[in-house]
Length: 299
Image (cartoon, rainbow, N blue to C red; front, side):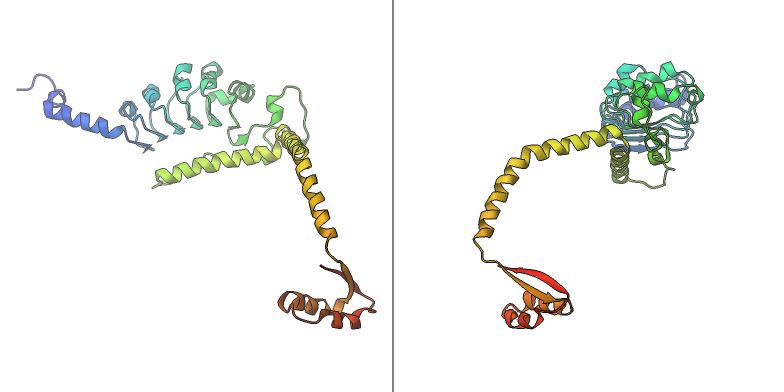
């Protein structure tokens, strides 16, 4: 006879608990989960996924993401289109030391103070918060950019130097949110994507953001020039020494200068490269006095 609900009786049975243990053991090896648009309300089943690297839990009814605290290997976390109104504290985000991409757009965030806890995430480079109430607040972008130090891209645009350095007015090319800095790093989800494809996509997004910054960040451009100058300065003695050695070798060879008619240029080159035994000197004697001449150096 069952004492309580059927579910409680079944789950308390010895065989059922053994089955649950096997499931939990298997979940430890999960590296990729994708639950998009399934009307899910909880993420509790992900607590045992300690090896998880890519988590797509978009377009559901999630309100609490604390179960992800044990997923310390996360690289990409997609939670857009849910009902999340607040984020866990800094301890939660400080534990996600590999997290690079975080998609939180189309949620219920309303306070900037709550979002600033993301500053504890040490490797976060791309974040989306558009279509949230907080994105309508004045200074929203300025606060996030200057709170999350490793951040490089926010809401379809790579962060410009003008947003980071106060009172620095740059030309149009380097201004915030200009077309050169635009990059949609959260495209529509595709069906049937694999873990390898997701990892390759993460690498592509990271490299694309870095490439945009390399060409549109004055600070990085100047740094690149200075590094190049210092490298050339340090290596110049080596090249100077090699150049001297080459000059000594060249002086040891006998140089002969000969005039060649432009009309016979192609034929002469063929003879030089494909018929080394050809009597070049005899042929060149006839071309010596032509108007169009070409210098050739024989060693």
